[in-house]
Image 1 (cartoon, rainbow, N blue to C red):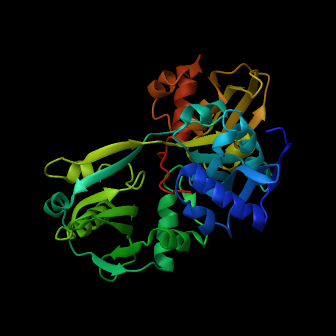
Image 2 (image 1 turned 90 degrees about the horizontal axis):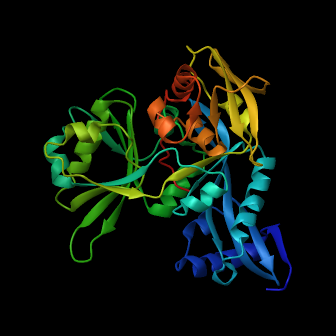
Image 3 (image 1 turned 60 degrees about the vertical axis):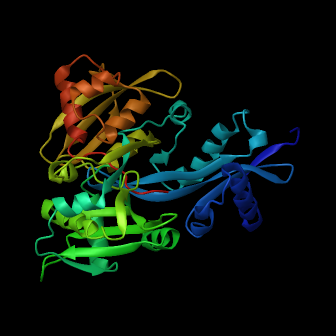
Length: 389
């Protein structure tokens, strides 16, 4: 390993090399490296003419407070097994973020099981992530579709509905025009729309099938977007009607929104939840990320804060919110609430649902009122990232 290590954006040759490296590092082919080639940025590390590390990056918007915020979404990163242990992954993350920051990214999201490693680099998990499984017969016995009509296929109206519903959470991707086709080609999805007769679409559901070795199958839900509780119930009833072929309905990690329709609807609560590694958020440009985010229209406040910077020192800032907008400017006023950069990311995503949860996460405040105001300012919407990348 004496050859010099260099970093570079991938050309066609390096892209092919990275695809081979990822197959070796992950132990299986990584389809997104092919499927996202037209849309993703790929940065690689090269030593002695060989690609030894790399990863994809997508510059997309994520919704926070109802507003789209430019985000560097990182995925499919790896380091060659023979190169591990030399902190190459840390340098690789810096190189992967660089071009996306230059193009306007002010936050960054990733999904990883190596949460300790990601925390050391500044990411934090705003919320837990669960995958759900429920017997198809249980859905059939528990939910009714009322008078909803179901139609197959994705339409522009359904995509507009998905965007409108995504704005009601902190974290979903503002899906580019190519996103749905990528998901369809990648996972062979079947998509259905739900609406009352003569009314606009109020529900969007997509799933794929997983065949069992001997008989039958499971349905794996990828998208579950409902504009109302009756719509959600109708969508669950539709899934229940697959009981003659599918014994189980699985909601892939993060696919089921964190609202209580399933909890309140099942006659016998025998659903299974499995914890998955979480999505994590990092603040790249704090003042700009706060300026671009949406804020409650009925909140007017000014809260002095102290934020731990990347060198370990504490910087003083004033958060000013008025008429649904915010500014974050330097100040000499002593902070009433102190955040590390990772705690700030959780607050930004609405991950602190109460002052108790914030304090139990290590947030320090000299004013309970100031902390309550900050919690309220980002808790209007809940954190949820159903999109995978």
